[in-house]
Image (cartoon, rainbow, N blue to C red):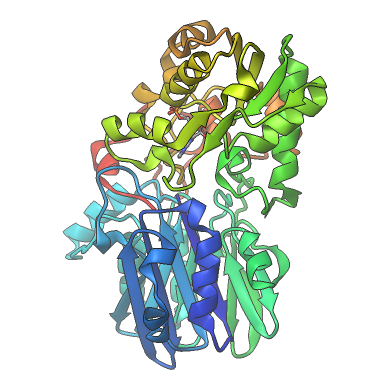
Length: 474
Ligand code: AMP
């Protein structure tokens, strides 16, 4: 889970990239980095932590040039390391290149072992470094053909930005798992994981970069190339709509906010319950709770207040901290819930520990009944394409049915949105695989251990190999 941002042709490239990353901070809070370029000279600053605290005016002044790319990283537990902070910068036979990646290469373990057997020395534990080594070994005569040859060897999810001595290049994998959009800021081109930075920097949204598309931006303007001759069906991640993207972004041509509101409406239609008030789990459950309340004709209140001075509790690496973190982050509003039958709306239930704590808090605050409504189906399968989900054994819905989870969470009722309801809200179809919803269905568009160009739509019931689980992803 990461965010990428790049700009070409602006006097304040690093400053704008800083702002872009600021707006993408929700996509990764562990590390941040920017690489800028003046001619053939590259300048890099990367740090652990949030964007605002990692860059000062002085650091930004040390990143001159009219082109820059940046990255915010959200890693899986255990791989917190500044060496994994992106963008990576490397110099190879053809000059300098900086690279920023969002997504997971599903066969990174195998690729890495193969490259190591051939003499490659890896400096990070990141899957992204595989791309660096493949580029260094490519023998094609120019950067673009080298890159196209490398992309053909990749299997998995990538929304990729590369900054070379003359170009900014953006590439999206053939299934388009992770989002990537482009826009214009006066004469400059901007590329970003989401559209929300464009509002901040007052850029104009042009369009999404298509699955399988490579966009090259240089002194001659912008041109588009295609990575793959065979076009697999696109499989953009549905969980971006459910949880991950910012609600003010546009995704797959739709407002994330409106999609979430619609998820809430569908949920209210599927699972009504006699109640007095609807409250969201802030911030992720807010638009869906608004939709639920509107559809059900119920009052909507802020029954939980979120402290904005703690990060997402999910990112804390240790269980003890994460559990404490929920109480640190959310506090019940007694006046909104006391003596009332409360519908609590959240976007997803993963381990169930957050919901359990919330139910406990609301009971202590005097709620008479607590009906938990989740604006997505049960999360039953881990993601191999860039969302940080725990292993299958920690996903409560992989081994427990709804009534068992209800008992664990200690709510009066628990209901999830159906997969059909989800698809209708995001504009997909139940029968066609318009989105990747493997975390809810187990239908993986790509096998985690697929060989090159691996088989499509393989239903998997396996866990990743050891080598894969040791590779950290961004
Ligand atoms: P849990 O206690 O594991 O059930 O956590 C559920 C909460 O985590 C929900 O409020 C979700 O909004 C949030 N959540 C779901 N998936 C993720 C994720 N991949 N990263 C961070 N938070 C998440």
